[in-house]
Image 1 (cartoon, rainbow, N blue to C red):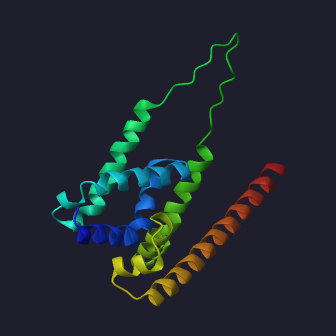
Image 2: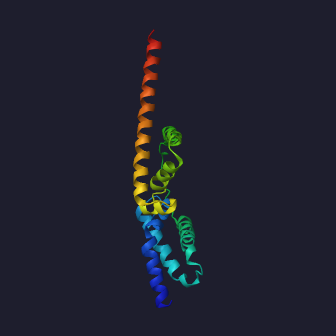
Image 3: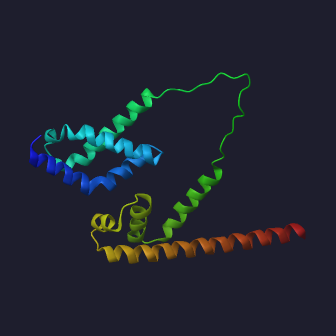
Length: 179
């Protein structure tokens, strides 16, 4: 690889490493494994860097390398089954509460204006930086910050309002049952 391409690759990694690490963290649950996954993908991509004609597609190429690497790791894992006299108690997680929380969150997001909703989703769900969010939405970083502040305040207000409504409903139900 030519010296100029090495410098180009180094610059690419320096500018994109945070976003790529977030992608790796979505692929594997352990943060240390995510770092290993990204490093392995970068090593594999480094050898093929000159073959990527359109460097704007480098993120997509690297993500595909990470997905393929994760799949290789999964296939190569050793299953650690240990025979025992007694089967362990199987516990099943009840995700009902998690689903209810998610449904509530999706419902209260509807109270936000579209611009506010976009900022909240990019900053908190996509975990973009303020600058990345600003670039994605075509606004200044200051506008992102103030919009996010107002949106979160509105969400808190809506949650408190719904909590008060729920408590009033419970109180009315108890009074009805007692009568």
